[in-house]
Amino acid sequence: MPTIRLATAADLPALHELVETTFLAAFGPLNTPANMKKYRAEYLTLPRVSRELAHPESRFFLVEIAGQLVGYLKLNQGAAQAEQLLDNALEIERIYVRPAWQGQQIGQLLCDFALATARSEGCRWVWLGVWEENRRAIRFYERNGFQIFSHHFFWLGDDRQKDYLLKREL
Image (cartoon, rainbow, N blue to C red; front, side):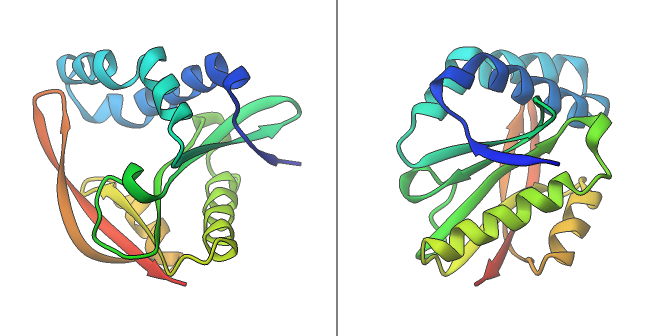
């Protein structure tokens, strides 16, 4: 049975490995090796993940099954959010699940956990960004009551990519 727990500094090496491998698995096949290499060198490093973990307005939650880390969730509030478009909001920056565990409701578990966290903290909105080419994720979030309300651009290496911003009112 999956358990969700808050990541701590002691989890940093395992969290870094999870962040890196799940991102590369999700987007490596859809982008050029050069752009993935550049992104990896800037955003998927141990020092970068360490700074994100230490940010007072960001939280990582880990999903474990039988002692194995199978996925994670990153939530941001306040100044840690990528955009400041909604008042009293919680950002789901990332939900990632190892490929071997996809299709087993881990992503849904994390989405439900994020929504419950936002409710318990009195947030009015939950929002997130999804690459316009990630149709599977867009459908997933729409099934969970999110609606596209804006967009922003995201640089993956030298490739300027459009992210849809989706929100859900609680």
